[in-house]
Length: 396
Ligand SMILES: Cc1cc2nc3c(=O)[nH]c(=O)nc-3n(C[C@H](O)[C@H](O)[C@H](O)COP(=O)(O)OP(=O)(O)OC[C@H]3O[C@@H](n4cnc5c(N)ncnc54)[C@H](O)[C@@H]3O)c2cc1C
Image (cartoon, rainbow, N blue to C red; front, side, top):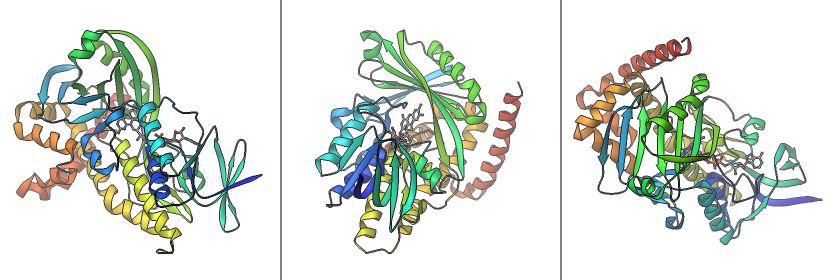
């Protein structure tokens, strides 16, 4: 038996559910195929920068566990200081709850979902696309690949290129009421411990998420870094619930995000912030864009899905590429940046404004004023310094 839907979405993370929501609310027959049973644990810090709130068409307050006003910075576990904002910088969620909530919104406007459907292959089927799962064959006019960092859809459609591999570990840590209360509005950020690496601690309603990320080439050091961070944070943890790693792919060049009637979104497309590892907001934005582009294609307003690739290249890629340049500076001189955030009000304010969406990464370059013509050179030199540090570290 073959099942059919006008649009099939692979994966029910934020990218897939936002694409399905956008299509279903306009009356399109859309089916999500998800390999996992929901709610499911997702290796993720669950931190949302407050800038994304304007992009989500419904209120996500029910799944926000903590609102963050303060950041406690450390450099190589040393020189800690705390900076505070008068309004929230980050919202902390648990992904099993956030993702189930987003699925419910898509279902409420008419999308369908099947769990336990692991997509194994795509093939051309007449004018449409055949989707083979372990159990069934599906058929659809358009496929939206929202199947995450190891995307089968992206691989099988030739859309898996120009990706910089990254890796992150996440530990879910128990702690007593007193510790949970004391740090309920504070995230911890550590940088400068090893080249390109950074760590975070997000408070949740009944535990802490402690994570570290870094370049895939130094992945063998990351688990130890996570363990050291847990020790060095000063938080009195009482136990560990889980410790898992997952890739974070970053697209490092503009390119194609569609091929024929297939398009890719979120992690499947490598749309993540190379500086912070943040990917939920890019998943939400690209999923929504995919939904819009597919709708206009189905309505006959556009002859192909090329408008989707164009919109991603115009709206999202410039920020990702700029973040990658700024990351080179961070990685070259993390302790200098650390001191600047501590000592200069202007730098801390710029940091907060980027998190809140009041400023973009492009504004950081503009902040160089009359020296901004040197920006490209500074980034290039920083990148060379970073590579040198990374190679030296690897040879240790
Ligand atoms: C340790 C770690 C910490 C992170 N912390 C943060 C953070 O604090 N804030 C933030 O913004 N980002 C964070 N990220 C990044 C964030 O998790 C991702 O960018 C985000 O989940 C991308 O959403 P998505 O919908 O594209 O993919 P996903 O959330 O990965 O969803 C993909 C879905 O597809 C399903 N799937 C996969 N393959 C198939 C298949 N073959 N068939 C059917 N279904 C399939 C999966 O089960 C999953 O449900 C973190 C990442 C890591 C690894």
